[in-house]
Amino acid sequence: MARKTVNDDPLAAVTLAVGQEDLLLDRAVREVVAAAKAADADTDVRELGPEQLQPGTLAELTSPSLFAERKVVVVRAAQDLSADTVKDVKAYLTAPAEEITLVLLHAGGAKGKGLLDAARKAGAREVACPKMTKPADRLAFVRQEFRALGRSATPEACQALVDAIGSDLRELASAVSQLVADVEGTIDEAVVGRYYTGRAEASSFTVADRAVEGRAAEALEALRWSLATGVAPVLITSALAQGVRAIGKLSSARGGRPADLARELGMPPWKIDRVRQQMRGWTPDGVALALRAVAEADAGVKGGGDDPEYALEKAVVTIARAARSRGRG
Image (tube, rainbow, N blue to C red; front, side, top):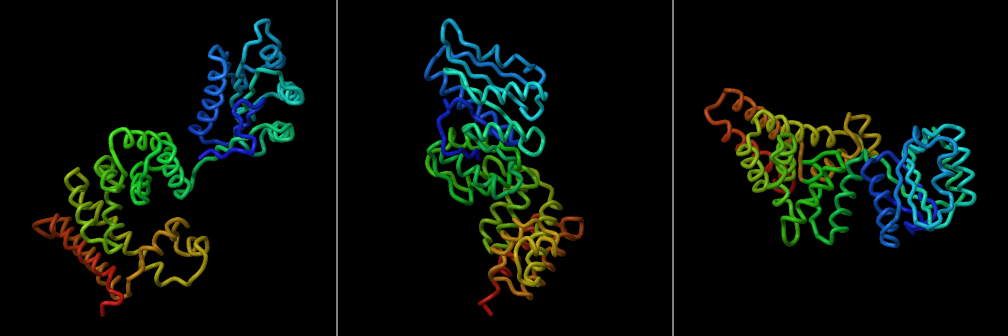
């Protein structure tokens, strides 16, 4: 989610939105425009790209008006401005005009860093809009979206939504808005499942996650939902195999930091953290038993049995029991 500096006044003379996450950049602009229009409904809003902001253009836009109107000037992709235009902007930063808010959208990085540094030195209000490449960041974004809308969602529901939707922040935000509009009370994993786990990949891995966590009833419920919504049985056996193999690989690996284990095992660090939580209760014998169950189910859904659904249910139950094998024997 967007993070702001101590100067949190959207009507500050200059707002600097830094990053490459389009949704957050657009929200930074909307926040400034909304504040300006709340102060003056007739606020004039101008948005320009590098090709439109030529030398001298900023001076024209920010020159005093006979009517002293409030104005918001938004400059997109400021890192791509020409050298002469950057000089104009830097000069403006030293003496910004009253009743005018300048919003600079900058991708960050080395390109155009001189302008970035100048804006910061001038005391610009800064909003960080980084690209959210880590699942943990997207999970935090979803939680914040629910909080911002004044609603409660369980941690499992937030995780299920991220698993189902993926990395597109606009889709995640839209999904949160839809759930808040349609559902009363706390939003839980079952609600997210009804809305979104019809997606084959997400649905298959939901089955696998619940099974390796030893949650047999929830795994069977997810399995039946997946099959009812048309998910191919082979996708489910593949997800089960990946889930059990991850448990086996991590349980036999040397201890260490997630980043080190990720390199050793060929998993992303976030998955190391998740599998560590899932592997509690597993034993080597349990892993072996679960792998045999997956192999039998795979053969069953590929023509080796009369009832693919039964083969999957049997595998899910066996895996869930194996996940709870430690301490029973």
